[in-house]
Image (cartoon, rainbow, N blue to C red; front, side, top):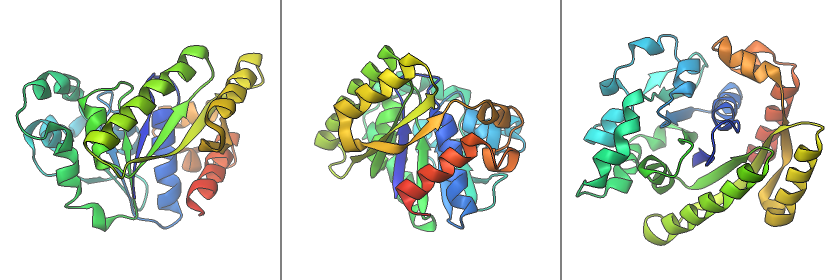
Length: 250
């Protein structure tokens, strides 16, 4: 199963979800691959011991921009591999605008060669609807949309669902929504109102599990660890364990 994790806005917990869900499944004994196609490369920086050694030729850049095989690295989590990102991915839209091949399928074409090695593959998408996002959606079976409290954050979901429908119509008819994940929840009125509106609009598509605002999740990344090795009893770790059980029955 290939799952894109996406959000139109930054700062919603998209990368945290990518790192933590993939780590949870790997820790449970599954063989997992995480593909980082966010040019900020935050997933790669947390999960690789020496990210500073990653060149654009040894990253997903080589696949997206030059149609080369995926460069797969082992991470600090047993059972979890990663295709790292690179800052040069930020130039992807300029490069692909004039491309004459099936530019939306470059990731899919190379991923098809390795996908049978893994139980689950996650794609950490950029916080924008770009050619990178189209590559991710075209390569995926499922989509998890990450949303945090706020009017603009909820409004951006409409843009992602429209893009999903366009991909279904033009590139990948098997692509479908897996669910919406509400993150950074707290006790404020804004948060309570946001989750209420989200459930009213999307019903059962919203996961039951809600991810709380938790400083341990941020601090784990600062320490370049996943939450399960940094603070396994924290509310953040408990919430993502609950999500893994809800979605993947582990």
